[in-house]
Image (cartoon, rainbow over all chains, first blue to last red; front, side, top):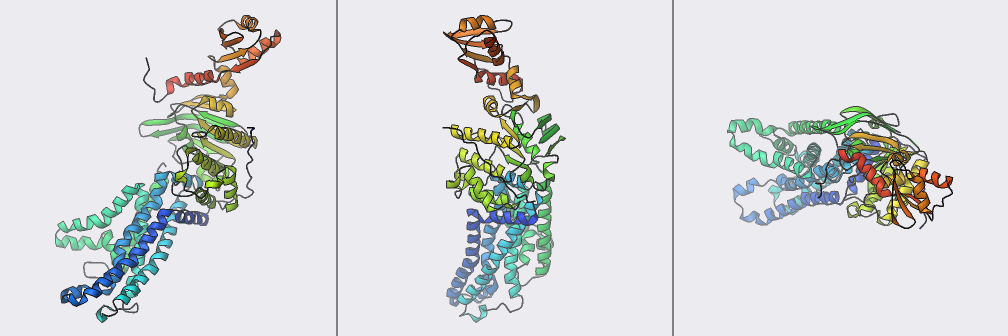
Length: 274
Length: 303
């Protein structure tokens, strides 16, 4: 076989790296992975599906429930029940968006294309935040309407988005999921390992809170409102007691946690060898 | 153009790259040779700013890699360990990198065709063979039409046709005036591709020389000569430090003298030569000789 001299097509265009271009690149990376599509589909299905099931069960058992049980049922708790489960899908995806690159070595290609590195982190956060919010907002709204429709026989369980705080709570559910996802992404960027990143958010949000119960009540009352789990959840609570933050306060503290985690991730991202 | 000055990298207590100074010039293929674990990949990561230098300095086309506004137009890199998300298709892998520089889909398609991945471009890269992975890596490196190429062991895992293809590609890239920096742990591979050699062992520079010079200096090199006048030639070349062995009539294996010298002697005395070959195995031996003391992981000496 004779040697074929390769012809390298020339590129007559030279473009600089800009934040907008890196954003487009991160959008391409996000939507071109099967794991992203499955995680987001799971998040949507859980956000809508769980309240629907919860509402159906509540509705069919309503007649047999004690007054005490009935008092425990709140329409908004039912509508936002899915958030508790879909946050797992969102959190795992948040971690994966960054640790997937480390696990496969893609991060070297990413940082060779964008050697200043930080634009990659900002773009990942922005794309993930927008995509998760754009998907989760309709999901929580649909969850609200679907659960309300299923519960329409029970006037006591009817509410509307125009009722005080309800719209804020429902939208808060989507904000919560978005911020939680970004926080998990930052954890992923810090530990650079999928299992480690998932373990970190599970520990922070699901393991540590119940452990705090060993402390005296006065301590718990002082600490609990401020831990990440409670602060984040305050964003979508309809009412808040003396030992929990207001929605605005919860949002502010959560944003602080997110900013801190992202800041640590950014410093490490620039400093560490890849 | 790559310029390294006293480049040094420590990982904890271990010094992976130790005071390397070298220049990779445009227009030639420069081979970067060293045993496994000698610091080749680390040096390449330092050039690309993936790892931070401990001391010393390295620039690409006059700047630190990180300071280039459009790095993919300056340097195209193929790194040894695969740098591709296994769940993403070759097409989207290339597109996502191209988009960081505003490079369009047309260029991505062009390169997919160039490296011969058209049929599998929409399949997940994790399903690729080693050879297909290397081709994708080459396409990634060429995406920005860069002035300088850095390729870590590009022929690893390629079949003979692929190796042939890479060699021609590298030569063509250099012929277009680009600086081409290629690492390998195989001397024979470099002898066929590179013009210039940078040899390292345990992170230190051992040789910075042209391939011709390296071959000339390889004192233990053995030259095979076939000649109908083998007996006459044997008498002519024998001298200080020259040994001649013969396994078959008309075939000599001569050590201690270069192919150039033998050719000159034969011409001067009207000796007909049918073959004059520097045996590649001896080239490999010369390399091993040079780096013997610097091999990181030695096999236990076999009895």
